[in-house]
Length: 166
Length: 453
Image (cartoon, rainbow over all chains, first blue to last red):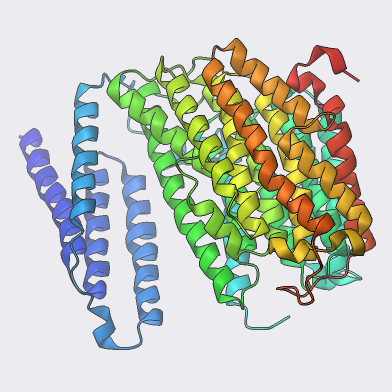
């Protein structure tokens, strides 16, 4: 029974994320596209939840659905002067479509033929506390470097948006 | 805690970068920040040399072998040279430039040590993120911002391709670590895709063909002082990272083929593309593509001489761009340089001859080492192309020398000339001396038995 419920949930969420991505690409209004992006990210968070990855789902909802989508909306708000500018002509790039289809087909073929190692699953689902312990011990170095990357990005943004002239 | 002591060079560079951000509070302002920067970076280079080869730290994610030592010393020393020049330049507000250069150097030093895919990726980001801002440092100039935006978008795209490759490598190997040779042995079609994507990103960072097209445009828009740093220091670190990663990959016939194709395309497109250029930045961008081709030749042969060659390329290239920053970025601006600054003109002869690979400059020994390594690996045809292309490259480098020595000075240069300072003279002199002598320092790296000092 649980298998079927998971299957239905997976089908719904997968349809929501792929359908949302298609809608995001095909809509003519950039604001609508931003909201479709938000929908895709939430559906992906649902997929993570289905895989028992609560923390990842929470981060996905907070960072991607929360912060990144808002950032996109802010960018649209700050760069568009008039309401009509939000509507862009629909220009289907057939070359790009063909390339994307080719890439997707090649990856699908490669993944279906690959022999992926079967990872050893832990006896119990790792908790967020376990995750934090690993992050701040085993992965402390990349974590600290990431903080420096953020600092550089912050200083760079301030430099470019700084109004004072020398 | 004591194992973290090997990160002392990184800590010194980080202190310099953070101090530069607070240059307002320093007596003497931006100049002091840049001076402090070069002193700390030089100290970092010396301490990295003194620390030498150590055990890996952080659970094995950061290695401190001979490759990491040499790359850390080279990156810190080049950053110190650049900051020394910056401390005497009249660019105006340089505190952010100094800070970004040091952050990028820090990223480069970590990149050279990383032996874990996640750490490597984030270190590469730290090494390239400051470069976006440096390339767009003239924030009031629309053309600079355009070049910087192009650089940012293309660099991000290639980063994503690389990350996709890394994720496939992780999926196939079940681990992100690549500690020893053959640690990553991706098989089948998916494995080939993983290797090609992962290497594509790194090739693009080295501006190797066929991922080179963004380089000339991005450099031509940027201030020459930024190009001097961005086109050299991250490249040295990138070569170290590429050497470490390809050393751990075992992908059968694919790797030599991919490296050979990229090296061939880079050498041909770089050297032939440089000929029609009238802008020193574009010319040096194509020259950089060509030299990436020589480097890939050595990396493909699995020879550590690639790192030695990258250093030997970086020093004169950095100095030539510093001269371009002072004398103007159009080739014609260099007319009459011999009359104005004869010492710099003679220094240019040494620097450019080293880039061509004429003995007794370092470039000759570098090329000798990498061509020898490629011959040992059985790449005779590629080596022949490389030698022919080295001769071809003499044409456009000599164009610069001819303009500097024999052309009539143009009355109005395209940009206002900077007043050369003592620090800039010292920096160019050090680079020139290094071009003549660095061979002895890296003789072990190049595995040239006869000339060890």
